View 1 (cartoon, helix red, strand yellow):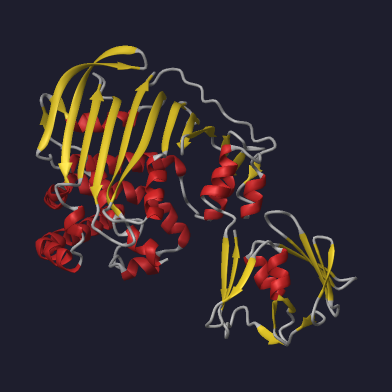
View 2 (cartoon, rainbow, N blue to C red; view 1 turned 90 degrees about the vertical axis):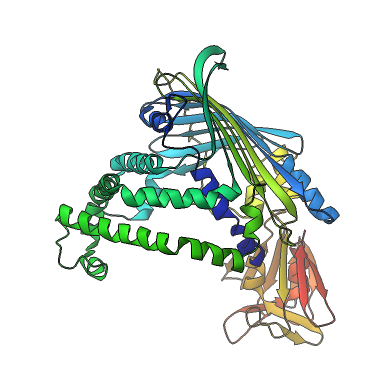
Length: 504
């Protein structure tokens, strides 16, 4: 967990770099605003995208870390054909490459479900969107307005984006899906050391954009008002300073919200430089991330209708030396092209018949593997490379979760906790007072019987040192080693008395 938290602190600079893609001013005769907003009116289209990663190892790293970096560099995604239909249906066909192995896949989404299939899968997977909406349980939610809100937010952000230092527009001739087109190439480059000034300029522009800011808040009000009303949010609004303004008074609520938001932006601008300086002092690693070695390069190829027909994105993020992140830098490269814009497009929807419903199933590692053909690329990657079946349990001498008991040199533990933490299925036979533990990966069964000093392990009788007993908490206790080894795990005890249970 500590490694994960440390790793995520680099996410914000990366996201910020992705935000500042281009400026709001006209460049070389090209209205950048229209170029960035032109795709908002696209109802149907076909496209393709490729994505690859490149990690540069730090000096002196271990062979294990170097192997992991090589795996990262072997990963790429090729989405050969995406179809966006005017009714919102989408389909995609492509492949994922990993360690020189290529796995074709297909995907589709309509109003009812997302369906996914990959080579080697015994059945497709799907997630019903209607059940997802129901699980949200949000009254007053109007999904039809969500696209309008997204468009409003995009327009507001793009309008206030500042121009980076390196930006240009030139006329070019490019091939898009076999067709030669006259396009305008918008090229921009941003380095990490430019980013703080660009963010500050963006905030200044936002503060001055009263009309756009008010329109944005007004649009959010229209979207959120039914939800707030259904939720009875009057009390919460009182706490935010809207107590004297009825919720139905749109003009009053929007005015107060705008003034409060502008005040917050202005307050941030007053302390921006000092807070940035403090941030560099408390997090010196940030100087590496926000340096000239971090660089975003974007090429957008725009047609006369202000639709982006091709785009190339190359983002490199410099990383400070760290035991948790043995990289000098990591890069993401993406190329895409779009054709048949607003033309007749029909998405290739996948059938849900026989597909596995992921909304009602929490797949264990074993169940996941069994959904792919043994020996298939995905099966081998999941088992051998990602090691999804690997488990490690640690039991301390005074463990208050597994609460082991040593009797005559044998460690006894509550069966259910250890079994379920090893993903095994536990079933109780009340008539025979027996408990069957089924291994998740291999399907082998271990059977214990309350009051019996014998167990069945994969069909073979094993003598126990004592009969299985029920403790004061109502849990059936069994010998740890018999249970764990019956589930294909190894048990070792270190010199400090800690018990290590590992399943490969």
